[in-house]
Length: 123
Image (cartoon, rainbow, N blue to C red):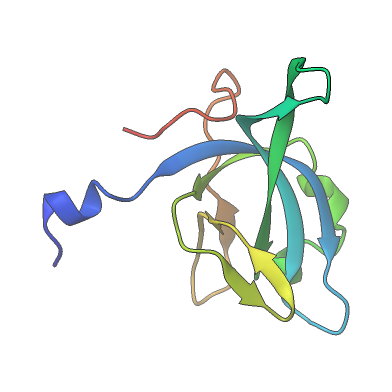
């Protein structure tokens, strides 16, 4: 058991999968590029400030459920976004995808309603 205070530290956000590809020489891993509606400020030499979409790379062990990773592109799913980065098979992962599975092989991503935009925090 954990306290409510400990649980409240977990940041859970909706993220839109922009790309998905199998990591070579692995059976289970996919590399996902995910939009969490985070923007990064870019300052040019002349002082002009622009904002650019910042995507995050997430490595997830779901490849067995998605023989064609492209079916994930465009899906909005729920992710833990405040985990320390972790290197998995040489690829940095900056979050964790939420999914459920059974011992019988049933599997599901946790997907919010289509009206929920990327970056929305779970409550």
